Image (cartoon, rainbow, N blue to C red; front, side, top):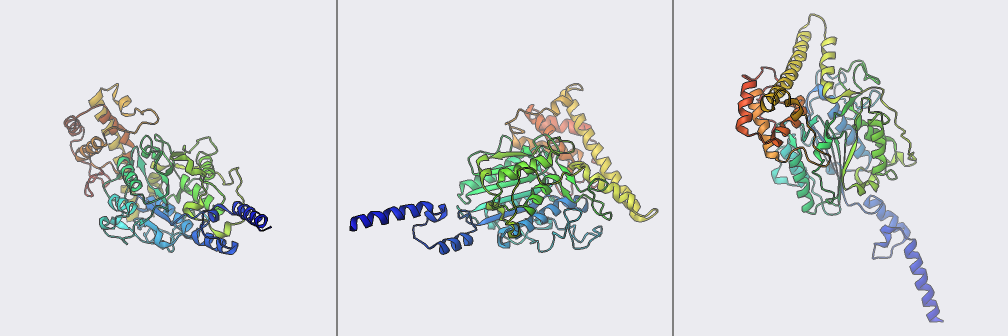
Length: 488
């Protein structure tokens, strides 16, 4: 009788064990259902995810680039509403737009035409000249000793932690802009990510990247076995797009002369604002964002959202990385895209022209503000023409008038990085800037041309010689100035 009773107890125990959720089966201590539920909520749900960390970085400055800091502030609100603590959210932003004299709503930043303030409560971890590549890398690595200025917060993560990185700014092939020099180059970024993985200080990482040619940051560079999943606003050869821009539809409030957001960025964030991220997977969000950013797969004023790295991670819920707003708990995910399409968007690199044009047009006639706005508009147009003309002439001198443009614009096969010798690329950038002035945020578009000069085996001496022939002096516009140093 006792033996039969023992067998029944064993069978009941085994059955109960298999009926328990996975997170309970892993627990070596038998617990009551109420204890298990409480433990799950305390840990953050859906199998313990350790600590969630987020790094949010806007790589630009100036009111004309309003949208990038607006993106970052909006992302912070999503993290905060999702349950992440301020001590685990690290924000990089120049912080010069909320109280800029041109901001029609002083102390307020919005990320959509009918949106509320996303600036309130945002931590000022690294602002102004503390927004540097060096600090960004030190924060990722948890290297407090290498941080200069700012709050000193770093990602002090452990092997069970999940990390989310969101970057928004201008970019170019193999490079991401920063409000300080030097810029962020793809090889250095990947090297830091590999180092972070080697330190066994995270479980998985997700990166969302908003920039022109942002796919080139990972193309042929990001390994598939270091537990990192990345999506980008565009592939390696195209621009990303600004949205909610003056004169476009939908347009910002009439008092704004600048774009409020970026198409890829507002797509993932507006999705996160309304859906239960405990049930929505990264793959589902990727598809929603891809469809909206491509304008329903037409690519009419849109770009190709891409994914890189360990793609299997996208089976996980978005919640694992950025939490989920409890008010969306009853929201049901629908496979069809539930986000409205923007009727028009603006090429990322032309968004500043829209800003300067509207600033000029709306300044009072005959005023000093009108004259200043006119000079700013002429300066940026002059700089663009100078950079475009200089790069094209260098190509013709190096490769001949017929082959020059062809060589400079050549795109390497899918899966290959932009350049083989990144040190050469950075050296050639410095040589160009020494003779022709700063590339600035617009000039990043020509990084492929400079990379192809390296890929063709051109020596530094030859590059210096032709650059000196093309540019006998550095233009006097602020965009060409080297007072901040070289971009590489």
